Image (cartoon, rainbow, N blue to C red):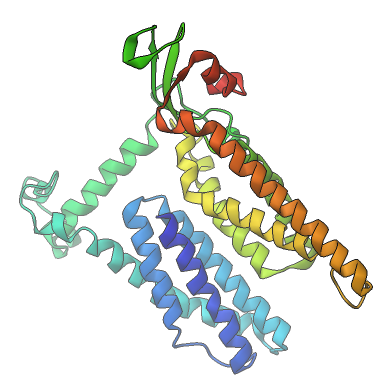
Length: 336
Protein backbone atom coordinates (compact mmCIF):
# COMPACT_ATOMS: atom_id res chain seq x y z
CA UNK A 1 0.00 0.00 0.00
CA UNK A 2 2.81 2.40 0.89
CA UNK A 3 4.51 2.06 -2.51
CA UNK A 4 1.23 2.52 -4.38
CA UNK A 5 0.29 5.64 -2.39
CA UNK A 6 3.71 7.26 -2.80
CA UNK A 7 3.82 6.64 -6.56
CA UNK A 8 0.23 7.85 -6.93
CA UNK A 9 1.17 11.19 -5.40
CA UNK A 10 4.04 11.55 -7.87
CA UNK A 11 1.70 10.84 -10.75
CA UNK A 12 -0.91 13.27 -9.47
CA UNK A 13 1.42 16.24 -9.02
CA UNK A 14 2.56 16.04 -12.64
CA UNK A 15 -0.54 18.04 -13.55
CA UNK A 16 0.85 21.27 -12.14
CA UNK A 17 3.90 21.00 -14.38
CA UNK A 18 1.74 20.47 -17.46
CA UNK A 19 -0.39 23.48 -16.51
CA UNK A 20 2.69 25.68 -16.51
CA UNK A 21 3.55 24.47 -20.02
CA UNK A 22 0.06 24.94 -21.52
CA UNK A 23 -0.87 28.26 -19.97
CA UNK A 24 -2.90 29.42 -16.94
CA UNK A 25 -6.30 29.31 -18.64
CA UNK A 26 -5.89 26.16 -20.70
CA UNK A 27 -8.40 23.36 -20.02
CA UNK A 28 -6.79 20.22 -18.62
CA UNK A 29 -8.84 17.29 -19.83
CA UNK A 30 -6.53 14.51 -20.99
CA UNK A 31 -4.30 13.82 -17.98
CA UNK A 32 -3.07 10.22 -18.14
CA UNK A 33 -0.99 10.63 -14.96
CA UNK A 34 -4.26 11.19 -13.08
CA UNK A 35 -5.53 7.89 -14.45
CA UNK A 36 -2.32 6.24 -13.27
CA UNK A 37 -2.81 7.84 -9.86
CA UNK A 38 -6.33 6.39 -9.77
CA UNK A 39 -5.01 2.91 -10.54
CA UNK A 40 -2.33 3.14 -7.87
CA UNK A 41 -4.68 4.52 -5.23
CA UNK A 42 -7.19 1.80 -6.02
CA UNK A 43 -4.41 -0.75 -5.59
CA UNK A 44 -3.45 0.86 -2.25
CA UNK A 45 -7.03 0.54 -1.01
CA UNK A 46 -7.08 -3.07 -2.21
CA UNK A 47 -4.11 -3.83 0.04
CA UNK A 48 -5.69 -2.07 3.03
CA UNK A 49 -8.89 -0.02 3.18
CA UNK A 50 -7.14 2.77 5.05
CA UNK A 51 -5.67 3.51 1.61
CA UNK A 52 -8.95 5.36 0.99
CA UNK A 53 -7.58 8.11 3.22
CA UNK A 54 -4.75 8.65 0.73
CA UNK A 55 -7.30 8.82 -2.09
CA UNK A 56 -9.23 11.53 -0.24
CA UNK A 57 -6.23 13.59 0.90
CA UNK A 58 -4.32 13.38 -2.39
CA UNK A 59 -7.51 14.27 -4.25
CA UNK A 60 -7.90 17.46 -2.24
CA UNK A 61 -4.22 18.32 -2.49
CA UNK A 62 -3.95 18.04 -6.28
CA UNK A 63 -7.03 20.23 -6.72
CA UNK A 64 -5.46 22.85 -4.47
CA UNK A 65 -2.26 22.60 -6.50
CA UNK A 66 -4.18 23.25 -9.70
CA UNK A 67 -5.91 26.26 -8.14
CA UNK A 68 -2.61 27.69 -6.93
CA UNK A 69 -0.93 27.03 -10.28
CA UNK A 70 -3.69 28.86 -12.17
CA UNK A 71 -3.61 31.75 -9.73
CA UNK A 72 0.17 32.03 -9.88
CA UNK A 73 0.03 31.79 -13.66
CA UNK A 74 -2.25 34.84 -13.87
CA UNK A 75 -5.52 33.15 -14.90
CA UNK A 76 -8.39 35.64 -14.64
CA UNK A 77 -10.94 33.14 -13.36
CA UNK A 78 -8.61 30.72 -11.67
CA UNK A 79 -11.25 29.64 -9.14
CA UNK A 80 -13.79 28.55 -11.75
CA UNK A 81 -11.09 26.89 -13.85
CA UNK A 82 -9.86 25.03 -10.79
CA UNK A 83 -13.35 23.80 -9.96
CA UNK A 84 -13.68 22.57 -13.54
CA UNK A 85 -10.42 20.69 -13.11
CA UNK A 86 -11.73 19.21 -9.89
CA UNK A 87 -14.85 17.96 -11.63
CA UNK A 88 -12.80 16.30 -14.36
CA UNK A 89 -10.55 14.72 -11.73
CA UNK A 90 -13.53 13.29 -9.85
CA UNK A 91 -15.07 11.64 -12.90
CA UNK A 92 -11.74 10.16 -13.98
CA UNK A 93 -9.75 9.24 -10.89
CA UNK A 94 -12.56 7.92 -8.69
CA UNK A 95 -14.04 5.48 -11.26
CA UNK A 96 -10.58 4.21 -12.18
CA UNK A 97 -9.71 3.71 -8.52
CA UNK A 98 -13.03 1.95 -7.92
CA UNK A 99 -12.58 -0.38 -10.90
CA UNK A 100 -9.02 -1.17 -9.83
CA UNK A 101 -10.22 -2.02 -6.34
CA UNK A 102 -13.06 -4.15 -7.72
CA UNK A 103 -10.60 -5.98 -9.96
CA UNK A 104 -8.72 -7.11 -6.86
CA UNK A 105 -11.86 -9.05 -5.88
CA UNK A 106 -12.23 -10.94 -9.17
CA UNK A 107 -11.02 -14.17 -7.60
CA UNK A 108 -13.59 -13.90 -4.83
CA UNK A 109 -16.38 -12.93 -7.24
CA UNK A 110 -15.65 -15.92 -9.47
CA UNK A 111 -15.50 -18.28 -6.54
CA UNK A 112 -18.47 -20.16 -5.17
CA UNK A 113 -16.79 -20.92 -1.85
CA UNK A 114 -15.38 -17.54 -0.76
CA UNK A 115 -16.50 -16.38 2.67
CA UNK A 116 -19.83 -14.55 2.30
CA UNK A 117 -19.79 -15.06 -1.47
CA UNK A 118 -23.30 -16.59 -1.59
CA UNK A 119 -24.90 -14.23 0.94
CA UNK A 120 -27.26 -12.85 -1.71
CA UNK A 121 -28.84 -16.27 -2.25
CA UNK A 122 -30.28 -16.30 1.25
CA UNK A 123 -31.09 -12.59 1.22
CA UNK A 124 -33.23 -11.79 -1.84
CA UNK A 125 -33.08 -8.23 -3.09
CA UNK A 126 -36.00 -5.85 -2.70
CA UNK A 127 -36.90 -2.76 -4.70
CA UNK A 128 -34.13 -1.10 -6.67
CA UNK A 129 -31.56 -3.41 -5.06
CA UNK A 130 -32.84 -6.11 -7.44
CA UNK A 131 -31.03 -4.25 -10.24
CA UNK A 132 -27.68 -4.94 -8.60
CA UNK A 133 -26.07 -8.30 -9.49
CA UNK A 134 -26.19 -10.78 -6.62
CA UNK A 135 -22.41 -11.23 -6.28
CA UNK A 136 -21.95 -7.46 -6.06
CA UNK A 137 -24.57 -7.28 -3.29
CA UNK A 138 -22.70 -10.02 -1.46
CA UNK A 139 -19.47 -8.06 -1.86
CA UNK A 140 -21.14 -4.94 -0.48
CA UNK A 141 -22.46 -6.90 2.50
CA UNK A 142 -18.97 -8.32 3.06
CA UNK A 143 -17.62 -4.78 3.29
CA UNK A 144 -20.40 -3.64 5.62
CA UNK A 145 -19.65 -6.50 7.99
CA UNK A 146 -15.91 -5.96 7.78
CA UNK A 147 -16.24 -2.22 8.41
CA UNK A 148 -18.59 -2.79 11.33
CA UNK A 149 -16.14 -5.26 12.87
CA UNK A 150 -13.06 -3.10 12.48
CA UNK A 151 -14.63 0.18 13.58
CA UNK A 152 -16.12 -1.52 16.62
CA UNK A 153 -12.95 -3.36 17.61
CA UNK A 154 -12.29 -2.19 21.16
CA UNK A 155 -10.94 -5.27 22.93
CA UNK A 156 -8.07 -4.58 25.29
CA UNK A 157 -4.54 -5.60 24.34
CA UNK A 158 -1.23 -5.32 26.16
CA UNK A 159 0.42 -3.65 23.18
CA UNK A 160 -2.44 -1.44 22.04
CA UNK A 161 -1.56 2.21 21.57
CA UNK A 162 -3.11 5.46 20.38
CA UNK A 163 -2.04 7.51 17.36
CA UNK A 164 -0.72 10.29 19.58
CA UNK A 165 1.80 7.91 21.14
CA UNK A 166 2.98 6.83 17.68
CA UNK A 167 4.52 10.28 17.22
CA UNK A 168 7.26 9.49 19.74
CA UNK A 169 7.08 5.67 19.47
CA UNK A 170 5.57 5.24 22.91
CA UNK A 171 4.36 1.64 22.68
CA UNK A 172 5.82 -0.67 20.00
CA UNK A 173 4.41 -4.17 19.58
CA UNK A 174 6.27 -7.20 20.86
CA UNK A 175 5.82 -9.95 18.28
CA UNK A 176 8.01 -12.41 20.12
CA UNK A 177 9.78 -12.68 23.44
CA UNK A 178 11.27 -15.75 25.08
CA UNK A 179 13.57 -16.08 28.07
CA UNK A 180 16.17 -18.84 28.45
CA UNK A 181 18.08 -20.22 31.41
CA UNK A 182 21.75 -21.25 31.18
CA UNK A 183 22.20 -24.20 28.83
CA UNK A 184 18.90 -23.66 26.98
CA UNK A 185 19.06 -22.86 23.26
CA UNK A 186 22.76 -22.13 23.57
CA UNK A 187 22.44 -19.64 26.42
CA UNK A 188 25.83 -19.38 28.17
CA UNK A 189 25.08 -16.69 30.75
CA UNK A 190 22.79 -16.41 33.74
CA UNK A 191 19.80 -15.48 31.58
CA UNK A 192 19.17 -14.93 27.86
CA UNK A 193 16.44 -13.29 25.83
CA UNK A 194 15.16 -13.59 22.28
CA UNK A 195 12.85 -10.81 21.08
CA UNK A 196 11.26 -9.39 17.96
CA UNK A 197 10.03 -5.88 18.69
CA UNK A 198 8.13 -3.63 16.29
CA UNK A 199 10.51 -0.78 16.98
CA UNK A 200 11.71 1.81 14.50
CA UNK A 201 15.22 3.18 14.59
CA UNK A 202 14.82 5.74 17.42
CA UNK A 203 17.26 8.23 15.90
CA UNK A 204 15.46 8.21 12.55
CA UNK A 205 11.98 8.21 14.10
CA UNK A 206 12.55 11.03 16.56
CA UNK A 207 14.62 13.09 14.15
CA UNK A 208 11.89 12.50 11.57
CA UNK A 209 9.31 14.00 13.91
CA UNK A 210 11.45 17.12 14.33
CA UNK A 211 11.91 17.22 10.55
CA UNK A 212 8.14 17.06 10.06
CA UNK A 213 7.68 20.10 12.28
CA UNK A 214 10.32 21.93 10.23
CA UNK A 215 8.69 20.83 6.96
CA UNK A 216 5.36 22.14 8.22
CA UNK A 217 6.94 25.48 9.12
CA UNK A 218 8.66 25.66 5.73
CA UNK A 219 5.41 24.89 3.97
CA UNK A 220 3.65 27.67 5.86
CA UNK A 221 6.44 30.10 5.13
CA UNK A 222 7.24 29.25 1.53
CA UNK A 223 4.04 27.59 0.27
CA UNK A 224 6.30 25.13 -1.53
CA UNK A 225 4.28 22.25 -2.99
CA UNK A 226 7.09 19.78 -2.24
CA UNK A 227 6.71 20.29 1.49
CA UNK A 228 2.94 20.08 1.10
CA UNK A 229 3.29 16.77 -0.72
CA UNK A 230 5.27 15.28 2.16
CA UNK A 231 2.80 16.55 4.74
CA UNK A 232 -0.21 15.27 2.79
CA UNK A 233 1.14 11.72 2.79
CA UNK A 234 1.88 11.84 6.51
CA UNK A 235 -1.55 13.29 7.30
CA UNK A 236 -3.32 10.67 5.18
CA UNK A 237 -1.59 7.83 6.98
CA UNK A 238 -1.86 9.30 10.47
CA UNK A 239 -5.01 11.39 10.77
CA UNK A 240 -7.41 8.68 9.56
CA UNK A 241 -6.89 6.78 12.81
CA UNK A 242 -7.91 9.81 14.86
CA UNK A 243 -11.45 9.22 13.57
CA UNK A 244 -11.71 6.04 15.66
CA UNK A 245 -10.51 7.02 19.15
CA UNK A 246 -12.07 3.99 20.83
CA UNK A 247 -10.68 1.41 18.41
CA UNK A 248 -7.89 -0.98 19.34
CA UNK A 249 -4.83 0.17 17.40
CA UNK A 250 -1.15 -0.70 17.20
CA UNK A 251 2.10 1.06 16.41
CA UNK A 252 2.72 -0.97 13.24
CA UNK A 253 -0.13 0.95 11.57
CA UNK A 254 2.47 3.68 11.08
CA UNK A 255 4.01 1.68 8.22
CA UNK A 256 1.59 3.52 5.91
CA UNK A 257 3.31 6.85 6.43
CA UNK A 258 6.90 5.76 7.13
CA UNK A 259 8.05 6.89 3.64
CA UNK A 260 6.77 10.41 4.22
CA UNK A 261 8.58 10.67 7.55
CA UNK A 262 11.77 9.63 5.72
CA UNK A 263 11.04 12.17 2.99
CA UNK A 264 10.80 14.88 5.64
CA UNK A 265 14.31 13.97 6.77
CA UNK A 266 15.50 14.06 3.16
CA UNK A 267 13.90 17.48 2.61
CA UNK A 268 15.52 18.94 5.72
CA UNK A 269 18.82 17.25 4.86
CA UNK A 270 18.75 18.88 1.43
CA UNK A 271 18.29 22.28 3.06
CA UNK A 272 21.20 21.59 5.42
CA UNK A 273 23.43 20.64 2.49
CA UNK A 274 22.61 23.90 0.68
CA UNK A 275 23.03 26.14 3.74
CA UNK A 276 25.60 28.84 3.15
CA UNK A 277 26.43 27.74 -0.40
CA UNK A 278 24.85 30.56 -2.40
CA UNK A 279 27.72 31.95 -4.50
CA UNK A 280 25.93 35.30 -4.73
CA UNK A 281 25.98 35.76 -0.96
CA UNK A 282 29.22 34.04 0.06
CA UNK A 283 32.78 34.08 -1.15
CA UNK A 284 34.06 31.02 -2.98
CA UNK A 285 36.21 29.94 -0.04
CA UNK A 286 33.25 30.27 2.34
CA UNK A 287 31.06 28.24 0.03
CA UNK A 288 33.61 25.41 -0.06
CA UNK A 289 34.00 25.47 3.71
CA UNK A 290 30.26 25.47 4.25
CA UNK A 291 29.80 22.58 1.87
CA UNK A 292 32.39 20.55 3.76
CA UNK A 293 30.71 21.39 7.07
CA UNK A 294 27.25 20.51 5.75
CA UNK A 295 28.49 17.22 4.33
CA UNK A 296 30.06 16.31 7.67
CA UNK A 297 26.78 17.04 9.46
CA UNK A 298 24.74 14.83 7.12
CA UNK A 299 27.30 12.01 7.11
CA UNK A 300 27.48 12.13 10.91
CA UNK A 301 23.72 11.69 11.13
CA UNK A 302 23.81 8.79 8.67
CA UNK A 303 26.61 7.09 10.59
CA UNK A 304 24.75 7.56 13.89
CA UNK A 305 21.54 6.14 12.42
CA UNK A 306 23.47 3.17 11.01
CA UNK A 307 25.16 2.51 14.35
CA UNK A 308 21.81 2.61 16.15
CA UNK A 309 20.35 0.18 13.62
CA UNK A 310 23.20 -2.24 14.28
CA UNK A 311 22.66 -1.80 18.02
CA UNK A 312 18.94 -2.63 17.79
CA UNK A 313 19.32 -5.40 15.19
CA UNK A 314 19.20 -8.22 17.81
CA UNK A 315 15.71 -7.18 19.00
CA UNK A 316 14.47 -6.85 15.41
CA UNK A 317 15.58 -10.35 14.40
CA UNK A 318 15.00 -12.52 17.47
CA UNK A 319 18.71 -13.02 18.12
CA UNK A 320 19.63 -14.80 21.36
CA UNK A 321 21.35 -12.23 23.57
CA UNK A 322 22.22 -11.67 27.21
CA UNK A 323 19.16 -10.49 29.18
CA UNK A 324 21.08 -7.42 30.32
CA UNK A 325 21.82 -6.60 26.69
CA UNK A 326 18.10 -6.80 25.96
CA UNK A 327 17.35 -4.48 28.88
CA UNK A 328 20.01 -2.08 27.59
CA UNK A 329 17.94 -1.64 24.43
CA UNK A 330 14.67 -0.91 26.24
CA UNK A 331 15.19 2.86 26.41
CA UNK A 332 11.63 3.61 27.55
CA UNK A 333 9.64 1.69 30.19
CA UNK A 334 6.72 1.44 27.76
CA UNK A 335 8.86 -0.56 25.31
CA UNK A 336 8.91 -3.54 27.65
